[in-house]
Length: 390
Image (cartoon, rainbow, N blue to C red; front, side):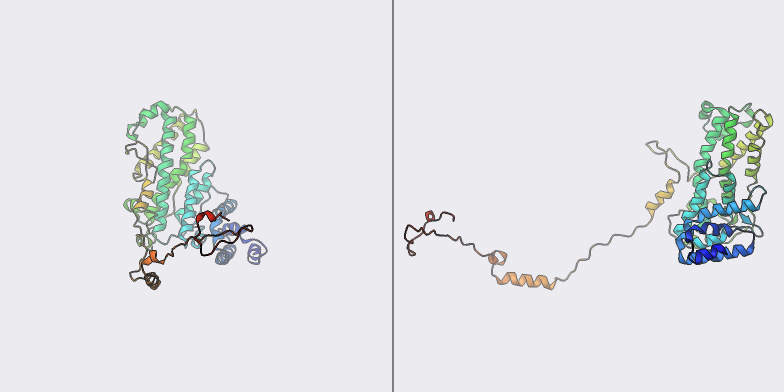
């Protein structure tokens, strides 16, 4: 109530309290939650851009609130029966603008690419909200899946290469071109177990993305073909049709939680059981990556120059294929103007056109009268010698 009075009464700048109102929208107390949602609606009607700019800071505040309310691990980002995102009401305020909706969704997905600066618990909280947002049209989950695939194709491949370097050594890993060449039963000892453990903990963010992608495809019955055909640059009405969830199952990140618990809590690099569990987690992550159909997003060296294309190149190539409006030619009047006719009539009256209109220049001469001599006879013929240029 205090925050609402200060923000609506002009005692406080609205942008300074919006992130806290977004956090209060996830409160357990229904009275506080409803009051915060009503205040956000009032502020959105007056300052629509403020909520867009404070969406992610508000998500962080809501995560802090949920962490304080629930001491149990981990903190989840949805309510049950049926599962719905804690920030679904806030997302409903920003989803009307396609540009702002896309920018906020991309910002949330990019947090998974900054694992060193983002807590894995916060990433799980973001994944829960993305999995259970109140999507209304087909374009929304397709947009999320598209950017998930882009990030999986880049970060997942990098994690696999780093894990191979730690598992076999850099020289041995470079000789293995294909995943089928690996035989997990023949591995007697890991080359660098601490480095492998570090990579396996970091790659759990990519595992969250893979599980999130599978969850969205199952929830809204989206096929791989539809995902590859989708492009955010296409302005077609096919993706604007209404959708609904086919299942009401909750997002399940249990493989990630078990991996983090075993790789961070029970660390013993000299134990054979710990080494076997690390190898098992590596195999599970490798199998998840091989199941992904990322042919549309992976880099390829098929060009003559041998330079790899950037991931998501077809995302930008399709922009060139979009129909462009033809340029208009300048309009030329077929009827001559009246002003042109008048000018032509005036020029013809002078007799002989433009050359006749010019007057013949006559050279005028001046004469000097000397005080010592008489004035020359006006009837006498004058010559050029009389003119001294004065």
